[in-house]
Length: 127
Image 1 (tube, rainbow, N blue to C red):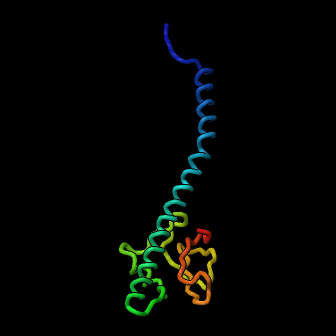
Image 2 (cartoon, rainbow, N blue to C red; image 1 turned 180 degrees about the horizontal axis):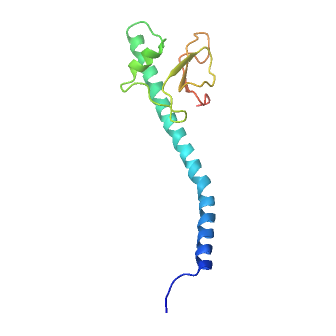
Image 3 (cartoon, helix red, strand yellow; image 1 turned 120 degrees about the vertical axis):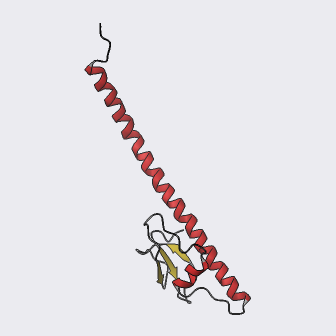
């Protein structure tokens, strides 16, 4: 006598696996988005530190100022401008006020703005 699984048993196992996959998939996708946001926030912290160091160095030299060009920010970063993990961009958009932009990073250069010298992620200016 041969031993094996019947077609009904195999179909039941496939249905159960399908149900488990549909339950687990949304949780996996959410973890991916959380990881991208965390990586972007970490890179943003590095950029903010580089801007603060630039300001401190110019203040020590007697001409305290924030970077006025993207090249000054990228020069302050040892490895260059990091990638925004959410939108996969490394470019910095110079703006007059904090606003969401298509760029990887948004840097406020208007001296009259309350956000002068601050940098934000291009996809989220609330961080």
